[in-house]
Length: 584
Image 1: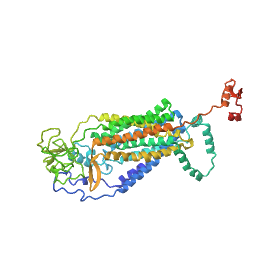
Image 2: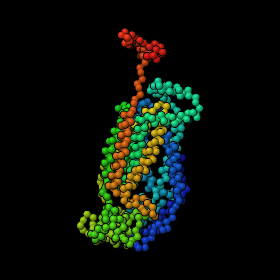
Image 3: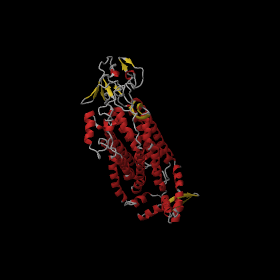
Image 4: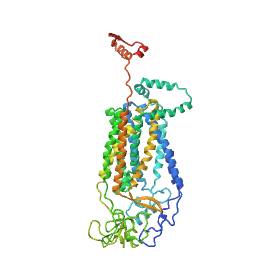
């Protein structure tokens, strides 16, 4: 994992300095209404940085090589070296600290983006002076479209930490002190026989390798195992999707800036994620749940989280966006053109290459000064840019029968008041709590190891994590991003190609996220419940009469006699030899 983090840093080490001055021909340039506007794609040169993408893919691949054994072999190691009633607590703590790492990533990652990307190569004083004080005096760097933060710095930190953690892990013994007694206390006679057979297995390595497909086929024939894995994959869709896009949802639904969204998600992950993982282990220990109880707990938590999905309908009102959510109004007359281009900006040669919103005196937000019909009559003030002669702003005031006579606009979206984000964050916290409670029981292998043969536990965990990656972690962010993007109202026109989304319809986003959440939760809750129905507990170990007799002799008492009816006569028998014991 240290090597993977180092590979992430290579593109920054090999690339040239970021040419932030080249992002605009003039530092005071603005996308205004003018018949002389040039096509931004005319002189645009495409930079071939595809090999950066391949490096990122390689880094993720190497990360996966190091990540998977920690949660497969690591889980089996804890289960082997801890008592059955304590395993849930230990695994819960491990996954709770994993959630702490996710929270630290949200919080720390957002703060690192406030550092200039090339702070190690250039003097950032000039950059901050130009971006913060000459153009956007009161805006933070993250809100300037030319700002690029130090995305690579976090990988430097993780590379060092991974390497330092690897050293003590190398020193762990195969068995911790006291492990032999723990295993002996819970091992069955059947397991002893399998263990002895495994120790006496002298087959060549090729023959053992050929038995690998048979072992996999033996596992996939266990319906309980398969259903638990499928349910866990569904829950991982939720976890992976929220981890990638929850800050984005906060930004779009509540007009939160990236830094605040990262801090909020860090707190939610810390409380809901870590708390849920610990809660799962505690509930298992308190109620002494067996495998059937564990998966039914997972099912209950999935259906409880289903109710929290209604929180996705909480959002700020949609911005009154001219040409998107509201039509253009010219002197009280509605513009019939349902698009960003109206009669008022017909000859302005506007484009959607860059998003530069302005707030008109009529209370409407416009995509850019050009779309508001503003000419080059503008000033750069201490707070924001002010525009005059904005032809599209000469319309009806929002929620009023009066008409504006001041065709002016200022940079930035029109401010909205929305005090309900706290309620959404609380419901998101509950959703994370219920979802991550299943992590300790059904996602980390605590239940899977109890429904597969003892000699295939590590293989079962390995198959589970492969499934979680292929059906959960990988498609989770992709599907969540697709669901969010389907609510986009205005796309970037990237020289004939579709670029980023500039504006989302909040109501559409709410419906789509709610549908996605409910579908996943219903599937996971149903599969967990069905797995409990298919589960057949192992037969109880019969009590040996020889053992009872031996214990009685050790206590100085006579062995008990068991009357057995046979042919109408009563006969008392005791086991005195191994053969008799086997006969009994």
